[in-house]
Image 1: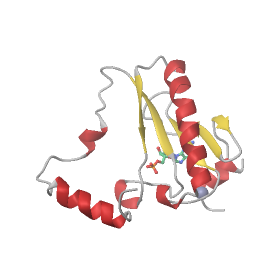
Image 2: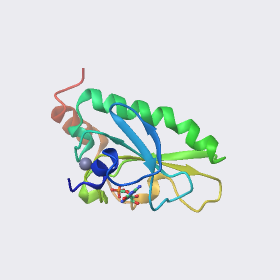
Image 3: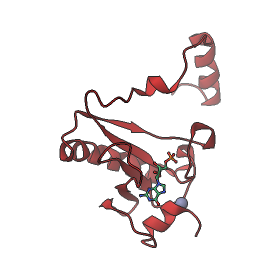
Length: 140
Ligand code: 5GP
Ligand code: ZN
């Protein structure tokens, strides 16, 4: 098994595990962006968020919600930045879906998710919205 996160899930390589559930495991990131930086992973190996089975997606998001407060409180943090690098082009280095939970404090020098992206001209919202609605099969 080549995937590092699959190997952590299987207990083949050690990790500081903070949550173990039937469909989800959470552990401390080995190179934390802040103390308490947790990654939450589905046990099932899929690379992208949109490849998750609905039940796995539910279990993953429930675990993220369940951990958000304890991670923040355990570290005495003011908030958490929660994010997913979804695909190699986004900087995802391990192709096994994972949600980062990173405790934040005032003045920690990190920005919001908006700071990832450069400012620039964008296409009209109506045109983009229509394209997405069409790709998603319309509004329900
Ligand atoms: P990505 O860049 O794919 O969103 O995040 C992958 C994360 O996995 C990185 O933050 C990296 O530090 C973490 N990571 C990589 N290898 C290991 C490992 O062997 N153990 C743990 N606990 N985290 C790892
Ligand atoms: Zn995997």
